[in-house]
Image (cartoon, rainbow, N blue to C red; front, top):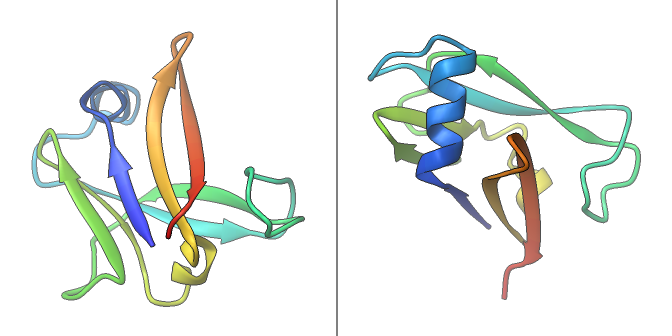
Length: 98
């Protein structure tokens, strides 16, 4: 289970969500869609939030903390998730984490 955010993707979040250093983005699961994992019918949601004192998974990039809470970390079980930019759009890339 791993979470990575490229600098370009972090800047996109900062610009699009008007974030400043110290802000945080929480990823959570939603029951619809698909995000490229074996968790069919589930997709990711995002929201500005305050991370708990010990988030299940987190990474800081460009002064922004990106995280999953304990209740949603199952979505990353067996995966490394990288958030990148492609054709001026955010892309979530999942690879099996061995």
